[in-house]
Image (spheres, rainbow, N blue to C red):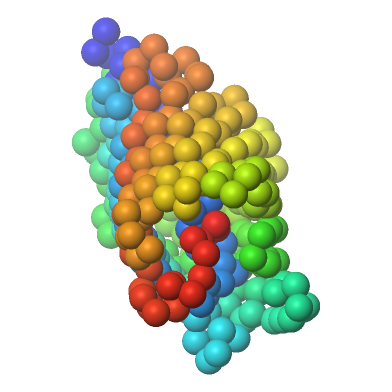
Length: 313
């Protein structure tokens, strides 16, 4: 059984490592800067978010990720600036990533408070792959005889974000360019030359809106489409309810992957705590009890927050 689990783990991790490298989280609808640099500075105040995700609990080598994001407005809200730090470990591969996000916010309709933001992301990934420590059945397999230590990979991305107080829409490609020649050669050696690059360019398309159900309950449906030409189209359908301006309760369905329950509590106007549980719908569920994700957010600018409704996205 242990060998079977190792085999499944390696197959899963290889698929993640050489296919969908963009980090997957479930609470992105509460801080869009994780997936779209155009989101940076879209609020009147600065905010910070920390997130930890443990994916596929009980499965050896399953992904574990930590993220910290900070963003806010500059120059009278015309510009947005932000930074993201990510640590991601999958099996015997590990990445440490830092990126700076900058966005220009253009007012399209002052009365309706509609804006269009164009954002850029620039940063780097420090990549390590300890394939020489990977459990394999053929110990003499040359593919797994060498490791990649602290490979520096520069990366560029971009995004556009159209928003008002009650709705938003966005499109982004977090990694348009990556200087990953050494990693590409390693990917080619494993997958027989089927990959031209290592870090792929995934496109994210998002949209959402807030409706008043009554004076105490708001409804926020949203959607996230993840597109890559070499992978099946994946869509997240999300439904969240804000109760008494204090508690967000919601659920998501990720096509061909998972059902997700989400809970977020506005402890104070400045402090937010969130939790998400992913119930896996694939065959991995036979070996894992699901995925857990916790989030802590802090909004700066206490006087500004007092004059505004709770943040919706």
